[in-house]
Length: 305
Image (cartoon, rainbow, N blue to C red; front, side, top):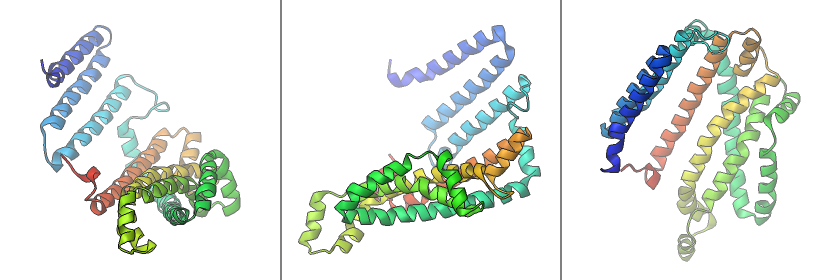
C-alpha cells in the first residue's frame, strides 16, 4: 500500500471511532467531533486536489470558519459562562454595536503607537545595520548591547518609557522601537553578509565602489532577510503598543480598553478588542508579505511548484 493512500481511509476511520466512543458518554461531544472531522476531511480533500488562487484562499478560510463554528457550538451546548468564554456571536454583536469605540482604539494603538514605532524602529535598525557592516568595532560592540536590550522584559521597560515620554502615543511608540530594533538589526546584518565571497570579488574586479556593490549586489541579496525581519516585527509592534497601554494611557486605546473592560467583566468587549488586534496584525503581516512577493519575485522562496 502506498503511504499516500493511508490518509484516505485513516482519517475517516479515526473520526468514526472517536465519534462512536463519544456518543456512548456525551452526545454533545459526539456532535462537535462530527463537525470537526467532517470539516477536516473536506479541507484535506480541497488542499490536496484543488488548484489555483481561489483554492489557496478557501482552504484557510474554511479552517477558520470551522474553528469559529466549533467554538460557538461548545459555548452553546455546554452553556459555558459568559465570563469564562463568550460565544463568537456575542463578540460579533459587540463589535457591531461598539464600532466607533473600536475604531478610536484602533487609531490610537495601531495607527499611532504601533505603526509609528514600527517605522522608526525598523528604519533605525536598517541604518544601524549599514553602519555595523562598515565598522568591525560596531559589530563587536553594538550587537551584544542590542542583545542585552532585546532581552529586557517589556513589563519592566514600558512603565519607564511612559514616565519619560508621557501617557500619549509617543511612549507606546518608544516601547515598539525598543522591541523591533534588535530583531530587525540582526536580520539586516545577516542579509548584508548573505552574498558570496566570489560575487563580491567579481564586483571588485569591475572596480565597483562600496556603494555600487551595496546597491547592485548586497541589498538585493539581503532583501529576503530584511523582509523576514519586517514580518517578525509586525507582531512585535502590536504586542508592544497594546501592552504599553496597560501602564498608562489616555482614555482611549486597545490596551486601555482591555484593562478597563476586564475590571467590568465585559468579556465580549475584551474579545472584540482582541479580534480587532488579530485582524489588524494579520492584515499588516499580509501587506508586508505582499510587498515582499512583488519585490523579491526572483528569490526561490517566492516560486511555487
